[in-house]
Picture (cartoon, rainbow, N blue to C red):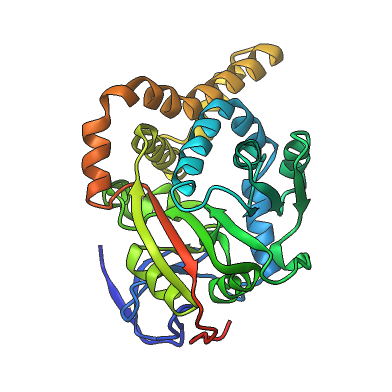
Length: 336
C-alpha cells in the first residue's frame, strides 16, 4: 500500500500540526495520521454538526434498534462489566452517561445506588430507555443546561470517536464534573489486535460516523491538555470482537466486490421465491449473519481466556478503557 506525505493544508484536530501522513483515500474522506501526536482521523470536507448528524442517522436506524434489542442480554453483561470497573473508583453519587443508547448501563447503575441521568441524540433509542423509568433526555450534551460541577461521574462509552470537536467536548465535560470527579471513557482501540489484522478495512474505520481513532497515547495527550489526570488505562477484549470484526469486514467486501455482490446474490435468491418466503428468508439470513459473532463469542467465552488475557496484557484489546480525574488546575492548554 502506498503511503503519501500530504503537504496541503489539513491540520490535526488535536494538536493543530499539518505534518500528516495520508493512510488511505476514499470517495467520502481521507484517513490521516498525525506525525506529531499520532492521532488517526478522517478528513471530511466542511465537517459540521449537521453532517455528523446525517452520518449518524444512516447508522442508527430501526434495523440497528432491532439488532440491539436482540442482543439485550449480551449488552446487559457488558454493562455489568463496565459497572464493576467503575465501582473500583467510585460507588455512589450523581452519574451522567452521554450516548446512553437504550439505557442498560444507567438502569444497572441506578440499581447499584447512583443517581443517574442519560443523554442520547437518537429519539428512537431514548424512547426505549425511558421505558426503564430512568431520566433520559434526547439531544446532544450542549443542548442541556446542566449546572457546573454537578456530577461525580461522567461516562462516555463508544462516543468520543463520533465527536467532531473532541477538545471542546472534553473541556465542557470537565466543567460539569465535581472536584476530583471521574471521567470514564471506552472507545475502540486503534492499536487493537483486530485493527492490525483488518487494517483500514476494519469496521471501526468504515463505519460512516466514526471520525477519530484513538490510542492510549493520543487519549492521554488530549485529556492531560484538557485538565484531566489519567488514573488508569487498559484494554478489554471479548470473544465476539474478532468474529464481529470479520463479519463487518466481509460485509464491506461483498458490497464492493465485482465478483460476489451481496445485493446481487440476494436478488437472485429472492427472485426464485414467493414474496412471503422471500421476506422471511432475507430477514433470517441477515439476522443469522449479524448474530453469529455473539453466539460464537458466548460459546467460546469460557475457553477463550488465554487469547483475551494475552491481548489485554499487551493493551491490544478491541476496547480502550480510560479512567480520568478532573484536576485542580483550572488552566487548559488548548482552546476548544
